[in-house]
Image (cartoon, rainbow, N blue to C red; front, side, top):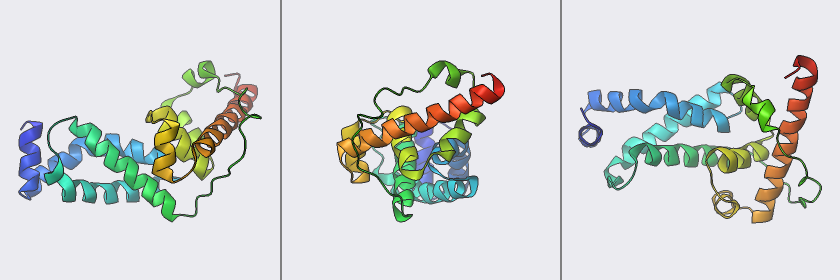
Length: 179
């Protein structure tokens, strides 16, 4: 069954089509959720909540763009809302102290996906959300500021501090593992 027919069957509440759609996207979207979550159980909660929204809003998908992109957007928004409900804090300080720190991409490329995910999950909550949105999802600081109800400077500051934090972790890994 092609994607459009699968979506149309899901809109008609065909349970086998809904299961097929879930099976098609759940693994990939789980990793999206996992990047925002503090642990696997939280990622599962976000994934389940987001899929409920996907199925509730399927009739609003207009087939104009990528369905996977549409689902990903719901996953990210659900994760952000989940994180907002938790008491995530954002510090609003200048970024001058952090601008010179850049994450060592050579060291990152040597890490496995699982190791990198572990590092991202260790980031403090505010850092992790901005890092994911900017570095992984590709949003601008303006978009992040709107999504998280923070200033663009706070977004920049959080990203700079996240990069510094990741750099410190990579340096520790390098000294302990010769990465």
